[in-house]
Each structure stands twice: as structure tokens, then as C-alpha cells.
Image (cartoon, rainbow, N blue to C red):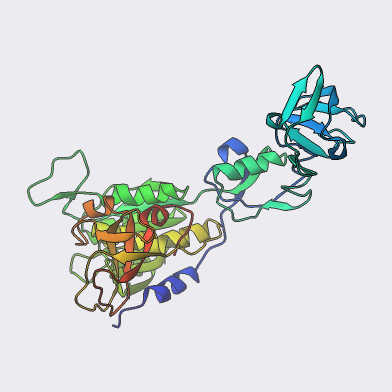
Length: 403
């Protein structure tokens, strides 16, 4: 079977999306990291009135340089009487600009003597005023449906008067790891066993997307147990993610059990690390079968599972940024798979990417030291100093972009 390019696998996966989950209304304080189900409209202009951008004096520009008697004092949060021509109003940041004033003289450029002020430096007409509607116009959309809500989005919704928002219920994602060789952290492994790292890291990636992981107990390589666990997970989850058991070995039962109890697409991807990937369904619940090697699982989740989950959550899914870097490593042999190397970037204008450690698909420590993944196209040979594209690990792991 020919290896499938990553973009084609992503296209096929993204063509099979369910309807978004039901929505609910939540107070703003509970909406961080959720996906907006309805656009947020402005109920008023922001700012809702002309106001001062600085502490100083509101006046008519034609009356400068003065001296001008100070006729009133306007703090923020209070109404402002109309300004009498030939006078100035002491005004503070955010306070209503009085009718009749057209400029604010900042206090640093004013000399105050005996109840009057004189400009020591003349402002431009209209200076230091924030105009009504200068930020947001009434009835405009300030947040669009599908937005992943960050802290500043909540502030924006609050600024136009919304106390709660309609957001989608977070997806419930069952996580099933398999393998006789795995022991849960805190256990007592035999000499031939290893600790289960995939469960924790897959659940962590799911939580980073604002979704709810449903962690299952690690399963031995026994077909019936795996099949029953898939059916049980399908009854409560919106999606299932497994690791291990999707290759072609005699002990790889996950693939067969998905096919026996549902339907299955299995691909050998032109991707390194992460060649075997399964996508299908059990009892109508979508299932992703990831490789068992921890870095392969980490990479395939970020490149393929993450964009699908975000789209299934109802989120808009922008493409992950590819940045330019300079290779501080070499790739001497052209490969038949698109490769993602774990690299550390320096702080140059065009950063130099150096390998963060052993690139084996079983070595997770080099992922922990990496700040980016360098993308090596199929058939490419790289010499130190060559240009390479990289994606930042921070974006690879976050909900900000995918795919």
C-alpha cells in the first residue's frame, strides 16, 4: 500500500465531521477556553461617549495659549456640564468630554497659576480625545460564532454589556491506551515493562483544547477486552482516542476490534514519526487509533486529531503558522516521508534550529526540550545553513491553530 500524504489524510478526516455539540449559556467568568456558539453583538458604541484619553484640561483649541480660567472639574464616571467659551475644564482619563470642548491639553503641557492655566506646548486640534464609537460601533459583531474564547475576548464581551454567552458543551474524549508492556505511573514495573506516558500526554493535549478527557484503565493486548472497552467508551464519549495496537503485528488488536464492531479507515502515512493511523467509528462514535510510540502519538495527535476535535467542537480552525528558520543540523539522506524534527530555536531574527536530542519516536525527552518542530519535506536533503520551515511547539499544543 502506498503511503498517504499528510494533507490527504487530513482532508479525508476533516470531511467526516459530526454536528457540533449542544450549546449552553454560561456566565462570562465560566467561558474561558470554550467555543462561542452565537456571535456577540454590540448593544452600544464603545466608547459610548467622547472622552479624555489623558489627565489634563478640556478646552477649545482656538482659545489657546490662554491663560484660561478653570471653570469646572470632571472626574471619570460623572456627567459634564457644557464648557463656557474662553474657559478650561480640569478633566481626568476616561471622563466625559464636555460639550463645547474640542481638544484636551495634557497636564504636563499646562502651567497652572491662580485658578487659570496656560499652554506651554500647543496641542493639535482634537488631540487626546477618544471619540464615541472609535473602537466598536453599536450593532456590530464583536465576536463571531466559532471563536475560541480567550481572556481578552471575555473582556470584549463585557465591554458591550454581555454578562453571559452561548457556548458549545465541551467534547468528551475517551482515552484508551493498550499494551502488555505498560504500567501506570506509581506502579511497580517488571524489568521488561515501561511506564505508560501516552495516557497522560494525550489527556493533557485534550485538556489544552478545553475538552474533557475520559481516561480509561490501560488495557492488555487482548482483543475481547479492547473491543468491550471501545463499546463502553462509545456509549459515553463524543470521540475515542486510542494509542497502540493499530499496526500489522499479531498483538495489534485495536485495528481489528474497531473494524469488527464498527467501521475503519487505516492509513500508512507518509509521516515521520507516526506512520500508522486508524480512523473509524464504533457504535457511531468516531475513533482515532494512534501509534503506540510516545512521540508518534504526540505528533499525530497535534497534526490530525487536534484539528478534527476543534472542528467537531464547533470552532473555526485556522492553519498552523509555518515560520522560517535556519538549519543548525543536517539531513543527509532523502526520505520517503514528511519528517517533523524536534528542535530548539535561538533568538535570532531568523532563528537557528538545532536538534533538541535523540529523534527516535520513543524518546519523549527531546519533545520536552523542543521549542519547535522542523518540517523536512519528502525527498529533501538539508545542510547546515539551509532554510527550513518550523512550527512552534506552543502553537502545536494550543487551541489557537491546527493542521
